[in-house]
Image (cartoon, rainbow, N blue to C red; front, side, top):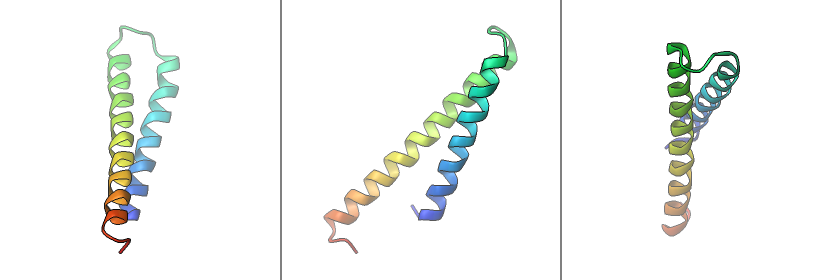
Length: 68
């Protein structure tokens, strides 16, 4: 994973988490908007987790292969 792709994906994940987190504070539970926003929050968290795992995995692989 290239550094630019990782930064962009992490930026999108942060945007999704922050935006949906702020919206969840204003929406009433049980409405369709709340469910969609909660789903968006979960997707943002999942994207962030995938990016972090990808970065850690790539760094470990590079370290194991000699740092090239």
